[in-house]
Amino acid sequence: MRFTARAPATSANLGPGFDCFGLALDLVNEVTVDTEAEPGVTWEGEGADELPTDGSDMVSRAMAYVTRAAVGGHSLPPLHMHGVSRIPLESGLGSSAAAAVAGVALASRLLDSPQDARTTFTLAADLEGHPDNAAAAVYGGFTLVVGNGSVQRFDPHPDVRPVVLVPEVRVPTEEARRALPGQVSREDAVFNAAHAALMMAAILLEPGLLRRAMQDRLHQEVRLALVPEVRGVFERLVAAEVPICVSGAGPSLLAFERDEHPIPDPGDGWRVLRLPVRAAGVEVLEG
Image (tube, rainbow, N blue to C red; front, top):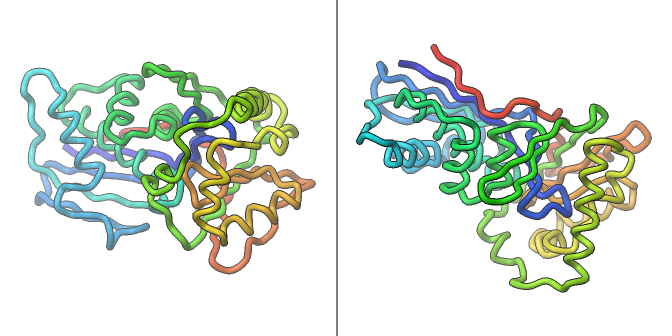
């Protein structure tokens, strides 16, 4: 048996939608498993020399997680796994969620027990810990995690044009989350609720509202403080009237380009990726 899973990069939060909003981007990791090849794990692409080859990587862990949860005591056959990594690591673009979703999808096919999207999402989110990224990686498009495993998926307005700015610096998600305060004021909570509602209208109906909608008071200031060089670019783009936010836990930035407000060059040490919204979530191809 030979299967290839394709799982997209994702950007979470989108400013005010902390731990709720996710957007799938057309930058895809591929993982191929082959039960007729010599067992082992190999990688190419982003972080290939850093990713483990002893079965402790997120894809392998997700496959083992699904196997343990399977009814009937099934086990995976020996296999070779090869990953093509295109999503930058520790950059706020959902690389670990893509790996978890790909692993869940592959294990389900190998066990001849294909899961529906909700089950795939639940298993991947339970293991990886970030349901906002997992939702977008499973469903594609723009997603809203409501809670209790419930996800609402939407197609963004066709004029939504994401641009990801990836700095050379990296920040582990755990570090970025530890920096967040344990409590927020009622005023800040109300501010974010209002702007999250406006963000829904902006991304689905009127992209001209994006710049106003993407303001946040819960997490961005803390995360930008961890990377002053990223804060400088963020502030410069805000001054240029570009709709922009921290992508997930950072340090990458997510902007939305308009004809009247093109994305300025962030300078040395940055990659600028113009990535369309990806309508499809994880896919598994046979052969």
